[in-house]
Image 1 (cartoon, rainbow, N blue to C red):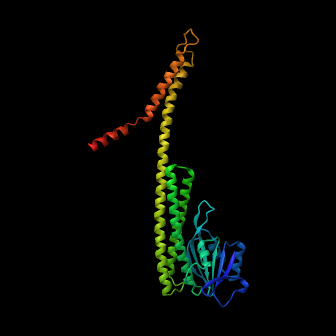
Image 2 (image 1 turned 180 degrees about the vertical axis):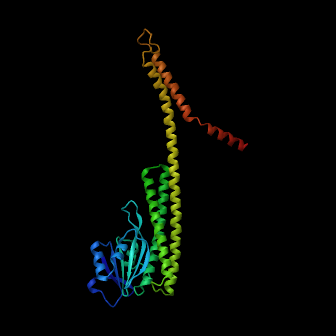
Image 3 (image 1 turned 90 degrees about the vertical axis):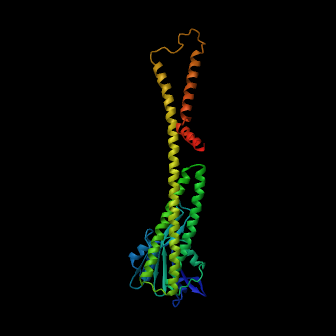
Length: 330
């Protein structure tokens, strides 16, 4: 989907391709670009095929390059899609900067570009393309910080659910959150390198006001990087803790199953022994209604059950700990 925007009285207006004012600056907004639309933009504006393929690559990192007739910058922007398992991801957005036209190319849609087209960013102007690019990065950092707070709240909610009962669904959601934080951390570091390259190189001509904005964007980007690293470490620690809890629970279950199997092994040995050509207890009784054999079996089962229960509930380390605790109190 390709849209054309021009600024009138400080506001961006969507204009048709036939009504574009060639004397005014133009923003070509290409989102959810198909292969046919990508070829159309490439042929119309003379963009190199390799550069177009890089901008359409979902895994492309941020960078800026100087070409003959235009400059190309690729930045990573946050994307929220609630319909996927990993709701928070990032996507590359390519900027092709000509003298009178700036083109943004993205294979998907994101809230940053929607905010720009909806005139939600104050002071945005098409008269200064480097400032326009810096404003996009500033808005991206704002969205990164907002999404990171939402991810943190979601992780805390999942942790509370896991405290009540450990389920596979919550663990998978926690793993998806860890993936989102990894995507954010990688993209923020890539954008930080882009900001440093804009400052050090002269590919874009930025004035003093743009440098001040660039300083603010770098501060926000570093803050987002630190938050992403912190939340990633916390989430990783939560997953490790619950993995240990699951392992301990498994050990307790295996302990009980082992005791039960040992008790059943005694019964199996006895039944196997008398399953051979050996007389059963009280088999010489003449009275067919004699209950001696049944009483013997019931008593034996009761003794075996008591023995198993005593083994499962007996914990010598607990008694030793209680003794030391009582001595400490004295």
